[in-house]
Image 1: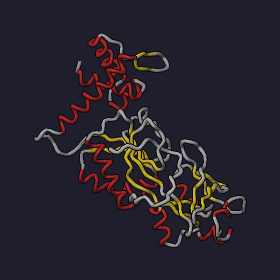
Image 2: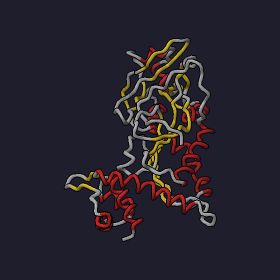
Image 3: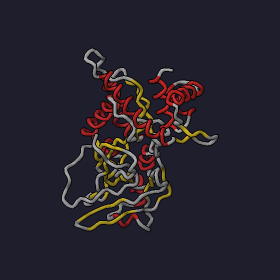
Image 4: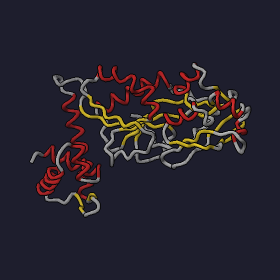
Amino acid sequence: MDRFDAMQAFARVVEAGSFTKAAQTLHMSRTSVTQLVQQLEARLRVKLLNRTTRRISVTADGAVFYERVLRLLADLHEAETNLPNASALPSGRLRVDVPSPLARMILVPALPAFHAKYPDIQLDMGVSDRNIDLIGENVDCVVRGGELTDQSLMARRVGELQLRVYAAPRYLERAGTPSHPEELENTHHRIVGFLWSRIGRAFPYAMHRDGKSLNVHGNYVLAVDDGNAYLEAGLAGMGVLWLPDYMARPHLARGELIPLFEDWRLDPMPLYVAFAPNRHVGIKLRVFIDWVAELLAEHAPVQAPAAGRHKPHAPDGASAVKV
């Protein structure tokens, strides 16, 4: 039995909650993973996992051993990468999930430069706006917008989205131009709804002017759960949009979107890279996070706090911890 392979297999089974999922992420057979864990238990003379036909859970001894295994694997990784004669370039597979507009407009166009700098990192990028189970789906990190509330995650704040309100000319020609945000409530005006993955419904937008604040829900005939579809619906004239500057900028320049309520302010939406607390922040994850932060410093920089700024009101996230 290779003790390193056995410990790695055990840790992955704990994280995935399944021998089958662990085997898939390790590119091994389920039988091999099962045998490695059984051999590890036999060597330690301790039961590490409770197995039933429906689920796998960690025993008390297994939980203690798991925490030590994580530290050992992390130390081994650092020892290998920090040797003077070892390759200075990070390598290996990195699984990430990012919002679809951010991927399409900012991250993917910049990937050739990332690959040129880190040619040995294999990047598996999920592109979605859904809520990700980082442990169960074996994802190293996610990029998400909004104040983070999931206390089980660690996160680094990497950007800040400045939001404004827009509509397509074809919508305004049909419905007229609203002069006040309240005109979006209980009138003929429509918004495009965005369904936040964590709560499965649209969310109100907080707007401020001259010390007055109001939450705009709006009425919609279409709500979507994907950022690219949200933008396309607005461009098609389906309703009023709330967009970050980086998404609106090219369409604004071409006259495809018109800004509304320019004397009103919206709180910026923070962007975070979040990851599970038991996920070792190895060099390949660290350089990816740093790369995302550098990109967003150009496209969505964090602004100095303004006096009286309200805390952004958003439904998706995790506890923010600098890494």
